[in-house]
Image (cartoon, rainbow, N blue to C red; front, side, top):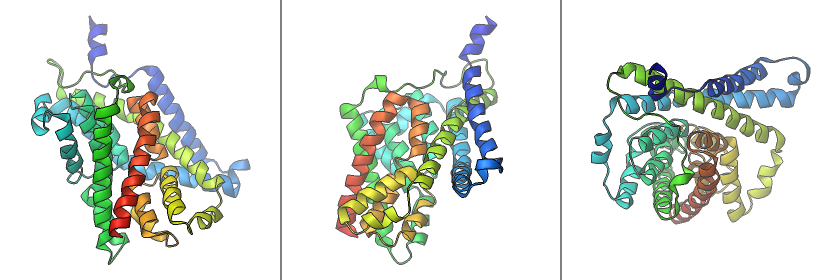
Length: 329
């Protein structure tokens, strides 16, 4: 009886998952602190610095997202979400897209929150729309964009419109083409279980999501650091001269650099050799598709979901960036 009850507790994670997450994080720490042998070479030092920087930059927001996910699971009644969103998924998509404007967070925070929303009965199309819009259009990101591009309010407006359009388009695309079997959420009880303490449920849910997502965050950071070290900087100059190639290249660069959405505007502003539209694509694509985000999505929703959703999102985000950019910038 006790064993059965323990399996129903939210957030209860298996020892292999905990061990795998701890192993990945331990390896990352060991690499970060190593300073002898080949690890002292300039390329290895640069790789270590970039990897650790990405993890440290994203970790506070991952903590925020997993804490919010645990709070939603433990404290928020399921009926609250059904009341807040229209019952028709097609109408719920633009509402979820607009909701990202008022909720601060980055892509690391949005993944566990979206997973929690789906487990609570929110239509996947609406939850995935929120996943894409919240990191790109929240007040912190828009303010950072205005600071990074002083005297250019059109860049802020273009980022807002392109991000809203891309997130809503992906929500509607999921309604049309998405399959429920692509989503493989961890098996967890949702909502408050009678007889269990809510704070204990919150702690277990937070523990589960953080361990599960943290390992994938480290793996994504390692992949991004590897690209940064192996691709020469001279490649940037090769693509900046072409209007079409510059948009595609900066979109691809945003995917592999994996810069947090609160900081990507400053990176985009520094790329002065590229057109405003190309830099807009960098800021729209990055919060929706990057290496660490794909790793987090794979760990949360399953690989079958990530290998379909991420490429489609990249194409839609580039198209919206190009359209909005060439109209406004």
